[in-house]
Length: 124
Image (cartoon, rainbow, N blue to C red):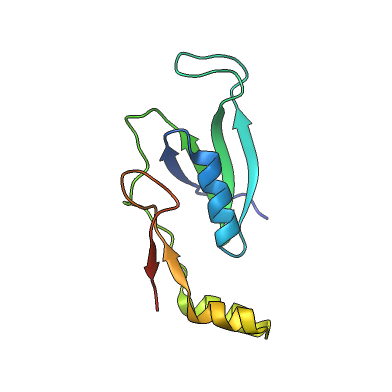
């Protein structure tokens, strides 16, 4: 994959890795590519704490940043994948379970109160 000219940075309060793994497991063409940890103790954390997470959702690169509690992740950002695109991909496999999934596609938001994975919203 070519290096992205722009990367979307999402701020979290200690949940960046868990959120990235959730999104990578939820959307096609998604993965967690790197987890960067603190090399030593620092004022608001300890050695080994996750600082940033590089991940891709539907082919788009993201950086998850574990900021401080003042910068909580919220519902101002959400992932939405076109139901038609997902249906085409799921029904192409021809299995009964994929056809059922194609009828029940959801958009996954970031939820409320800074929590993830958030509420599923009916997209079709």
